[in-house]
Image (cartoon, rainbow over all chains, first blue to last red):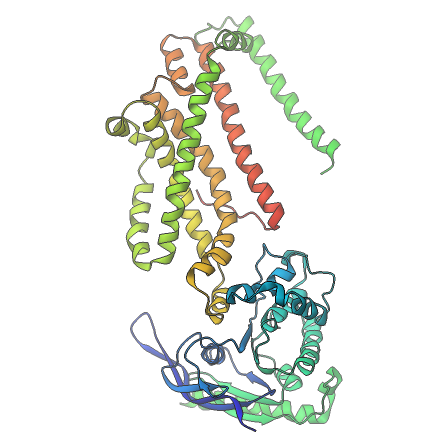
Length: 260
Length: 259
């Protein structure tokens, strides 16, 4: 299968305030197939967020290139929807108007997307909350709204930067399973960053393990658990093996970094 | 809070004030305090009554200076805040100047403004505007800056124009801060307007106070101070009401503005 997203030998350096240079992402190459669900795990500061921002076309790469749907990413693309750790909803807007925010910013006809927004709100289980304000919703509900907002312009790719990290464990599991349901209904390519190894394995077709300083992908793990995934799978022996594999590659790369 | 509880709380405060006024009246009558030193509340009311026909014109003059200065401060302060937020260069130029100017006791500029713009309303409006200006600039800039970086990333991912981001994201985010600053600014505007009238004016409640004090009409001084306080309270609650309307419509938490 041809890759939908191709990251080719990409490097990202930042200049620090003292004039030095920090390599946030070191010569990274990876392919992500259409409709694939890829999770990225790794310690803080390993360039995961930088990688997402590069794919989104928000920041340019220092070297190398990123190809999305056959064309080089030079600027933000309509094929990208983003979800962050915080819901960052607009507090003065209703749920519906928050979901329609991208349409408004893109200058597309709002009336045409109203029904789609309503369908998405129903899909994430928030029917009846269309005219609620963010403050009236729980953190989990707010994050569902953020997911609707990322989907409303029907992008092919969903980039998620630790979307459930700020939620409590119960809500987190619930939303993970829900995301898989949405993914199977809407067929998106998902790149999902997380700190949680179980979350990374439970959701993914493929787990990428990254390390810090310089940030790079050190291991790639195909997850062959059957779909649909259920939370109980976390107790299976197979899951345990995946989890041990991810953990050991994080530990060994840390030890390597410490030795270097 | 239930209505009866609110009433009983206000009631207690009102009773305390009433008791104080009665005590004041009794003290003046029985301790034979001279009227030029401390007039009894009843005499203050009488003095106000005598001057009642002149009060509306002076009241309106002060009100004009207050709102003139307040609106001028908004009209100048908000665009400057926008420039500071959008231009790192202007931020480096304007902010240090603002901070330096902030440390000048601004009412001390009143005599200078009298020389520059002349006697009467224009200089009163200007001094009122200068006093109200700083909290508006600082808080509006803080509000425009309060947008989360992720939200800006999100708008960037739609390739949105800066103007659209300003109207749809930055300005609404700043609105609570601006409204909160307006409450501080209106109170400062009252101070500025009165100082202006003290220094050079033939109208306004500030002028009336100076005039009455020069003829040792202490009762009238007290009376006008009372009217001035009512004016200040009225202005403040007007802005607070506007803030309340906007806040309840948009359901945000009101931030605490910096003075």
